[in-house]
Length: 114
Image (cartoon, rainbow, N blue to C red; front, side, top):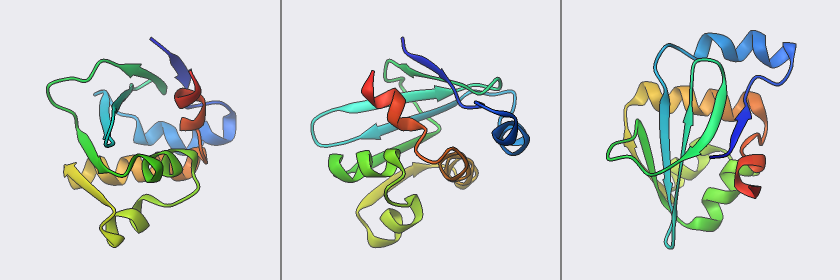
């Protein structure tokens, strides 16, 4: 399994650490052809995992737009408002993920390349 640190430097540590609580956040991105599931734990480690039976958040949509989202090229809020991306999960988990995406500025690029 691929593993990377969300908390890369002191600056990110100050803002991201409060978002990472004792439970692991499981996120599944489901495109037309394949799915990607990542987990983010309380230490800020993120890794690809086998798709679980349930995730905290599951996104359904166009694979190209999901990749643009993970690269930081388009905002999660924009995709949801335009109807391009459907979300299943709690609002709290959605806000947490949006904050992580915003603060890491395309962090998910490294996970997708591996």
